[in-house]
Figure 1 (cartoon, rainbow, N blue to C red):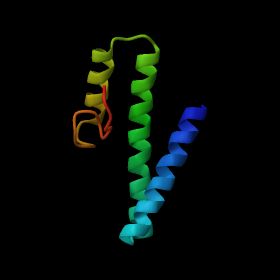
Figure 2 (figure 1 turned 90 degrees about the vertical axis):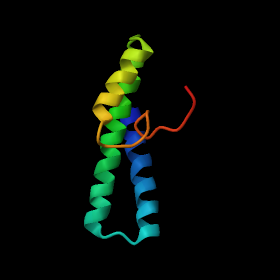
Figure 3 (figure 1 turned 45 degrees about the vertical axis):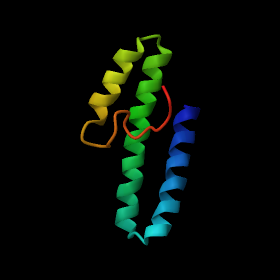
Figure 4 (figure 1 turned 180 degrees about the vertical axis):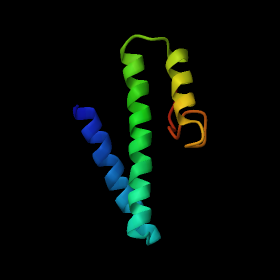
Length: 82
């Protein structure tokens, strides 16, 4: 799956850049990367839901449910217009 590989790479690069700014330990970097992978998977599932032709409201509710307790904001950390 190309999109998953791209998302993973972007998350790792962003995580590494942020880790360098905060002087994180190797374990903190590993945990941070894991968190980005979780968010990427949740967002990928939301994209697949929409691509399957399901109603936006249904996909958004599934996104919120999967993201509960993992991120702040109404769209699981996504900051763009809908």
